[in-house]
Length: 249
Image (tube, rainbow, N blue to C red):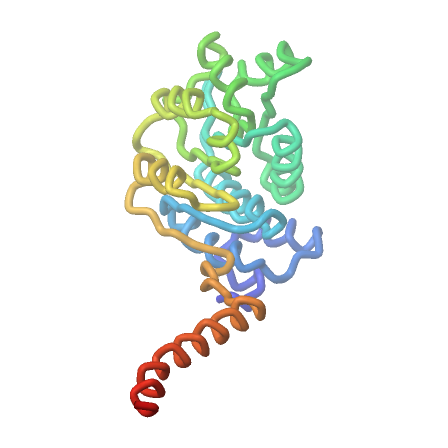
């Protein structure tokens, strides 16, 4: 599957047409590994370096799920929520949904700290298919009664390791508590430290774990190899010394 084209993935025609319009033919490693599981509705923990294509890996399955099973989100509600640590990532993910969802016509809104908060709340008032936002702003909207997550179907944590590094644990916990337990949860990170694995264990149900590339074995550098040979030579000389002394006697 790693060398497959997007046409070999089980994606509906409007999304295939959008991929063709963007001139995307072959999925990246993380996309080829993650998309089939996400299309099946599985919870997923994924790891890949920046630029590996994690955004598209969750964008396409979300678009497919929401477009096949269409129904109103409801006032102040969202069907899918993507959390990411910074406004720049919010914008990037929004552009991805707009590009690949151009033929499925799902509503989306971006929410983040800064100006434009009134417009954000107004967009949410009628209900939104996809909300993309920073954890702090999402919690602010929940506390103000301007966003409800009780009908949420898909929750994505993008750059989860960075969100923990930024100390957003309390905000994430508040969001998890506001969301229904029956949902698809997707966690993507650049690295998978113990804290991320613990977070995934607490959030994901029967998840699949995918890597863009499996963790590489520790490599020994040329300098380290030379040092090992030097130490081994010294050990052999030391082991021979008692024999040489005994021979002289």
